[in-house]
Length: 200
Image 1 (cartoon, one colour):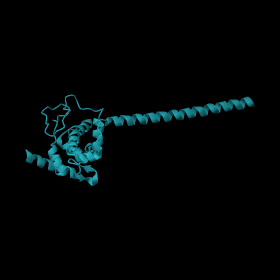
Image 2 (cartoon, rainbow, N blue to C red):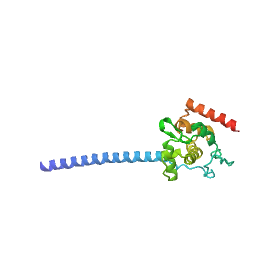
Image 3 (cartoon, rainbow, N blue to C red):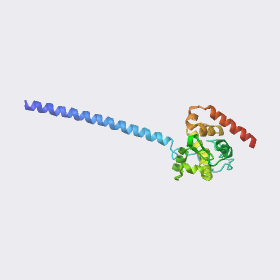
Image 4 (tube, rainbow, N blue to C red):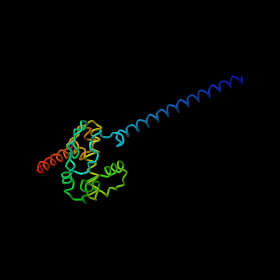
């Protein structure tokens, strides 16, 4: 009788151990699977992963630096967007301009997210308030319009043009990916085109 009970006890322990290990294994697989997915998703947006094709101008930080070199991948010259016009549209050229309920600062009405992206890409430590410095604001806006937005457009296989760049700058890259252009953005681009024509 004792031997029978002992055998049943051992069998029961083995079953419990198997279930515990199986469930733990499934749990580990699930955790590692989710972690891998999130890591891949983050890398898709990382500035260190999706770089510009070889030959694309890497040092464009001034609106006057319009290159005649056009790469086959982008078909876009550096400096495609006129920063002087963007500056007028955003702040009427006022370095201390504050908009969007305090969320947008400086000549180019930069948001804190853009500053963080620049810091991450260049290992700098600018604060959001530094956007009120005209030189800093111009530097970051030039990078964002000439480099970062085109990089995202290229990643999502969207044609890089002054319209798509301005669309992303005004409405966010998410709206460009979804093909959704708010009326305010349509007016923004139309005003840019009018000012551009006057300057031509």
